[in-house]
Image (tube, rainbow, N blue to C red; front, side, top):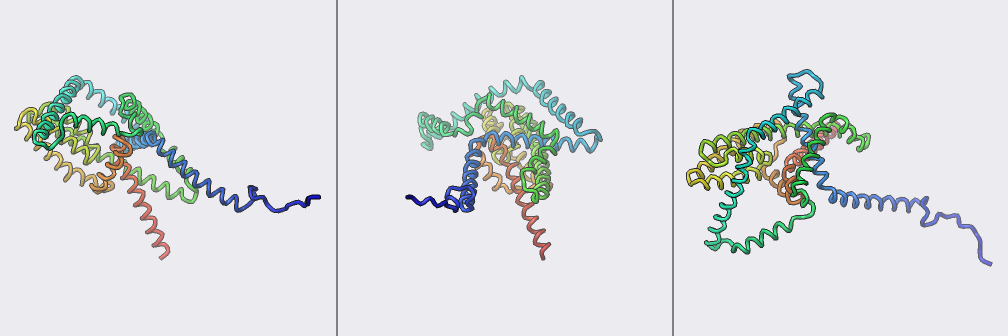
Length: 353
């Protein structure tokens, strides 16, 4: 007859077994980390849109705080004034310059195509570039290599939808930033919440100052470029000024694109006009690089040019045009967080000394 003695030890698959629970917990941590990385890759574009909304909210918050220095009214009313003034400015600018800018956009496209054909034709005649058929093949291959992550942003509907979501997100966050700050703190262990809150405040201040400097640079570059190009008789001066102002939000890369457009359009109207466009570009960029940027850097995070350009290259390669536009704010916030961590370590060292 078989032995029917009862086994008292824990089963190897029993959840009460300490070894099994320890190994299961370790496996769940690694599985959660892998799922988090995969989810981050899949949701990278929505996360970028959310971050863009945070950047827009910081821009609105900066205007609200600035207005609060002269108008002692509630935050909601100040936010309403900022939004109304911004909307009125955009609508007024579109009404005053809409027809002219629309005509210049069509003219700019044809001018750039003509100048590009001339330039590639010259390089081909000198044997420095493949033939036209080879160039078309290279361009198609390059465009076809764009990943799935950024493909939908290139469509007009995707761009408009993304912009609308960014504006709505930024508006909601700017209405009550404290609520979202508390929500983020709840995701952090209790003993780290105080330091996390201080870091958030410091990152918010840095972001507001950085955006204020960007707006100043955009205004100076846009207005100065448009006026100078108009004086020199460069075609589409107003459109080029608007483009220069918008691209000034993206340092380094924006300046290069602006210079290419100015020079191409300038030389389409003549050699003298082309030289005037080159001079305008150099003077405006010199003022921005040696006056505005250092002045802004003294009051905000000082980002080395190589660090900024490297971050832009990585962000544009991974996330497309939206990543390129947000590379500077992301780098500034990361640097601020690291600086705060260094300050905290120094404070601990001084306390234990």
